[in-house]
Length: 136
Image 1 (cartoon, helix red, strand yellow):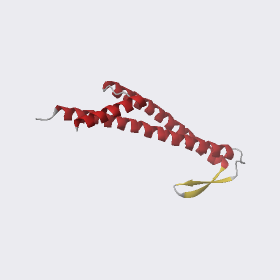
Image 2: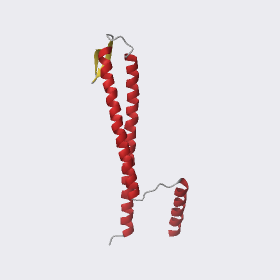
Image 3: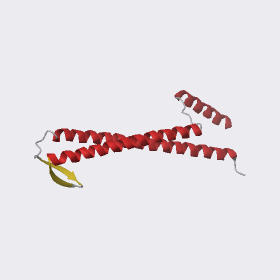
């Protein structure tokens, strides 16, 4: 006959692991957003410089590992489109982050998960330590 305490522990462990998985997914989305922010800033800086160039000035851009020559007039719209695509991607990730937060909150409430304060965690560790000593 299976030990109910062991089954309960396994169920609790599975709940915690799934919760941690959801939190990790949320962190990954946040990291992608941070990366997109950095890319947007870089492209904006380049655009600000290129906009001041004469329209006929030659500019070089790496495309799939190959250096390609453009005029400033040709490059500005391309770069603006890239920046807009990056901003659109960031907005999608922002929505995804909100949805993941709602999912995590729902899961937390469904399984009555709560975060312990540092004092509560220390008290629990002391209690578990005293319990282990008493069992020996």
